[in-house]
Image (cartoon, rainbow, N blue to C red; front, side, top):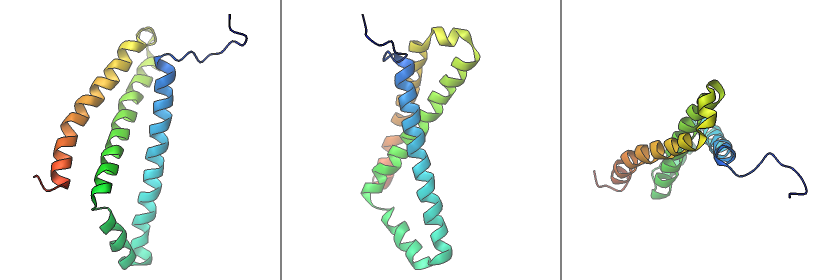
Length: 124
């Protein structure tokens, strides 16, 4: 018997809640950086060009892939959250919906990553 009752039991819904919040924060920080670097063009076009030049490095290729992964996962999980909030059957089928999110995520990333990496590293 547990000494303190808790709502958090480590089930699919809780872990997807963590994933949703994590991807949301990552997307927020991307948008913040994007707004700041875009605003830089008004202050100093040379500095803006320098910053944009850094974005064309292999490191940023992987950061862009991470951004696409975060947006994809956040969007698909958002659809799962809407379903759970809207229909009682979805609440009873959390595990199936979580698997659906991860399978959809894998399909989108499998379609995106090869082309993105080939384009970034000169293969296409």
